[in-house]
Length: 119
Image (tube, rainbow, N blue to C red; front, top):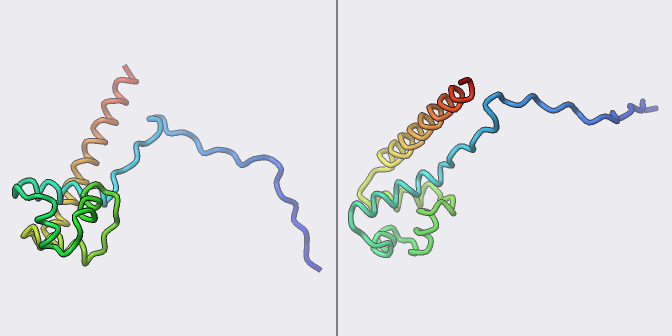
């Protein structure tokens, strides 16, 4: 016969809080990608519809990508990158650089906050 194991009646203890307080959520890849695509399109002085037409996507879909509302497939990212005359490697590197810069800014802000709390 099976052995019955009693369930605990007390709630599990909470993990200790970080002394720096709650962490700010990290930026999402799709947000950084969208910002990079929009920046490049604006730098070229293009309208959304012009870039979308060359990429073979609807202007609405491209707009949603730029605003970080869609998770485009790698094929869609490559199509939009091609429409902006940038390689997938160049675009990916630019997104990674943006994410690294944001992470560095967040860590500097965290250090400043820790110093101000200690003072």
